[in-house]
Amino acid sequence: MTGQRNVELEKTLGVASIVLFGLAYMGPLIIIGMFGIIANASQGAAAGSMFIATVAILFTALSYARMARHYPMSGSGYTYVRKTIGPKSGFMVGWCLLLDYVFIPLVIWLVGAEYLYAQFPEIPKAVWLLIFVAVTTAINLVGIKVADRANMIVISFQVVILALYFILSLTSIINDGGASRLIDPEPFIGVQQELGPIASGAAVAAYVFLGYDAVTTLSEETKDAAKNIPRGIVLVALVGGAIFVVMAFLMALILPGGQLENAEAAGSQIALTIGGQVFAAFFLAALVAQQFNAGIAAQASSARLLFAMGRDGIFPRSFFGYVSRKFRTPSLNIILCGVIGLGAVFLSLQTSTSFINFGAFVGFTMVNVAVIAYYVRHRAERLNRFLYIVLPAIGAIVDLYLLVNLDNLAKLVGGSWLLLGLIYLAVLTRGFTRKAPELGANTTAEWPSPAESNSGEEEKSTKVSPEPSAPATDVN
Image (cartoon, rainbow, N blue to C red; front, top):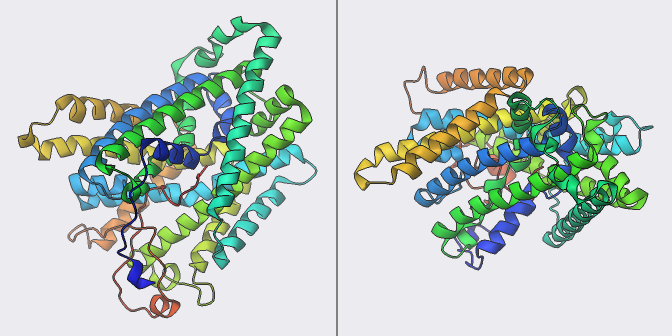
């Protein structure tokens, strides 16, 4: 198999293909699963919050696109910051993005558990969570990969359910109060009609976009990648944002209010209202399938990142660099991710989502700053100041504003994680006197043999991007 490492992939994909990939990666039903949380955080302005989140993501998407032209690598914010600002800043951005990796599986499993608990309340939520974690962990331990054909079936099922959800919602609204209800401003301005709650909702809503930059993983298979990958990044953010805003608007008309009861399962409640028991059952099946597939992918990605960091010596190699001799999987890292996922029993969906968004907003902000830093380093090239200074500056300001509007617990945990990373970097660099280690790179490289990995010998590392952007499935 080692002889295949440098084989080039056939460049067959165009813009349309990579946009569809990016939308599927984000998960088409995630806005429905997160609606109640966003509605409560925004005091009834779910559509307004989604609009602000979309604007923030679009500015950052433009910066990602700009950097992808200059550094057509993994599309990692960590890579962009390291190359334009410096290795130590890059390490800290990678460390913050690691927080995403640590908590993404937890949130995915929690969303699925919340919806199953709402449908079957006689079974405790903790039991549903344990089932999600146990089954997903078992699958990842033995290294079973979900077939692409099965993934396409699940994604197609989700798209059909989303289309039906839209049609039934629109029909229900018109039948209930006429077409005039479609110009009701409350889903955008909320109950309080204040920017603060809307911004707080937007800080939570940004979660549904995580992974929008995943199209960068298709660079080797995309025709004219230097042009089409940046276009794909922006289009995924734009099209995804439009879908999310429209769905949030319709759902807020059907289930208005600033404090919904059982917000975690509001999507199922609306599905029951617009389509009855049969449609509600299909919706629940599609959502659980999405969360199950996403959980497999997210846990595998998290374990693989931790493995690479262990093999690089950033984390203790004996634990994080261990590979199961029987299954050739990073079994200890997989189990660790599962144990962390069980912590969802003690967390709300809004709080755990905010943990992820803390790392994401730090990464997004620094990608915008990286564009400005690139301009400073390459002033002689007479780059467009509007594209390299004004737009990324606006993006950084919006991202920082949303970061500040995360809940206090998320900021406390995120800030503590950031401080821990700074201390760890000081240790690794002997008081910042040495070069920062690289958190690095290719998630598609195959595992070493157990004998190689567990021998403790120094190896050339297989690198993993610290951005939550692989494998090719949704991570919500």
